[in-house]
Length: 191
Image: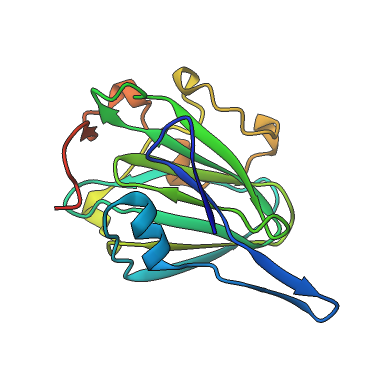
């Protein structure tokens, strides 16, 4: 596995080593020891989630407040997505900035989205299967979101706005500057 820090260093791209031949392929999709050695801290994933979506489905930008904040390790099993992590830690030098990475069944790339970030993705191919690990259980009372189309975030979702398919919840999320439900930079949300 290769670990690469992005322009927002807490967000990490993981490229697993794929072993393939005429029979197919084998890949380790998760190694706690290697990830923790790279990060310098421990993450205890407790739940795996999976979704299947049509092209144009946009899910996000979502996060959960502390003490239910989540780290996500995301990947695509079938198809492709543009995956986005937005820094929502007040006081961070990268506050309001984002990382966007294409994840696909072909490139097997993964993205680690730590606590303190909003997360979302748009589906680029039909019948895309998206899978992810989280280190905290879903908490409806701590569930929050930010508008996917907040102009201050400058996110290029790669598809025309009229082709996007959103849940009712995601159509009415506040803009980043309209919410106080955020994180503070420098606070250890893993303690």
